[in-house]
Length: 336
Picture 1 (cartoon, rainbow, N blue to C red):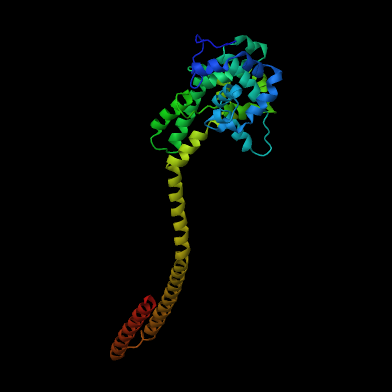
Picture 2: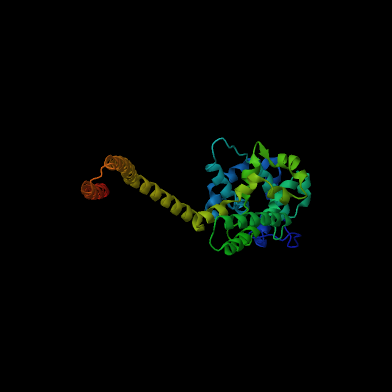
């Protein structure tokens, strides 16, 4: 029995808009495997299969499972396996998330809406719609928040041509691009941990907001998982790193120059102090000599011999002239 019909109420993004692929997928046998407990062991084996990351699955997968493997490849489960292979220490992921979102995706693309409520897959169906529905309101809310945050950081980090980068970012976020910003692995990393499940999120956080998209756009951990494009863009195109490196280089040159000049500055300070000390000594000597000359003059005030006075005046001029020459010579020698 084939469940798929071309009269789908949802319009899906690639690759879930391939009608022939969906017609092959939506069969009773595949529904039995995906929806019933009896098929869980097979699903786990397929989820771990390396063929999910290979381009030609027909060569490595039995024909009866080709449609299922294509379905898992379309759900980007290769990226999930990479997350599990390169997971950080002390972070444990539960593959139950994959089983449940696989069921929700199958129910939606195969138009089995009753299975959504029957198996309690409402939140997982919302996640799948965010990923692959053509015009999804929740995804638009998340994209607006990403645009706002990245625009601010592009300007603060001095990225080249921020307008062009925002256009590329918007295309990636909308899903109309070969490279998508919001991926299944993003939801897997956010909700597949035992201590931060989708069930916990829907009970404790989701009621505080008006929509799923608004709740996720305010979830710091989820938004950080979407920061890869921002990080790579700033690392490759931002002039901030160049400015920081140039500033650091000039600061290093300033320190080196200061160290080299310190010795010369010390010498100059020493010379200045010596010069001030010598000038002080010369000034004291000059004051003493002037005082001595004044006393000598007073000794001859009461002498009425004009010739003696004339000789004294002549001698005093010669002494003063000689002492002036001595001072000039000493100061010149000191300056030299």
